Length: 112
Length: 112
Image (cartoon, rainbow over all chains, first blue to last red; front, top):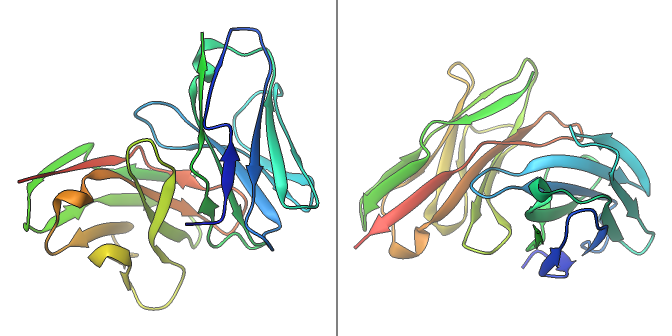
């Protein structure tokens, strides 16, 4: 049990819609990272937030955006959904040096 | 550029046999190395990590890994596997920055 929770567990959307995924980090962790894991692949880094500011970004377009709140919760927003956005989305929290990340169980998104 | 390569996509093994899951990384700077396990429909659970110090790292569930700087490897081993070890295993690395790079995963299948 990592203390990191995500909601919802599953979600179905249609192409062109927008989605918001939520993560509640472990208490005291001031960084949160989001990853996309397509079926049969390893997780791909989307971005990281540190003290409510974006701290780095992977190779994802601007329609992937995020927010981090003072209460250790965060959101991943995806606009204009595409079929290829279907994946498991994982959030991970940690401390500033990011030596170790603690992953949530993920949200499985299906885009039809 | 930093990369992580898991050399085997699938590893079938009989119960109580030893197993080695291979991981190579490339980085021009010092790295932190991790192994995670993912059970079906779940998030990632940290098995073990190498940050510095002793090159032999022991983790949970009887797993261990050895950091070999000259061969840029971080192979995961277990002397005797159980049916319950059947899962997907991911090797990961980061350089202390914001981005963790994951390998594509190795599916360990333990047969009775």
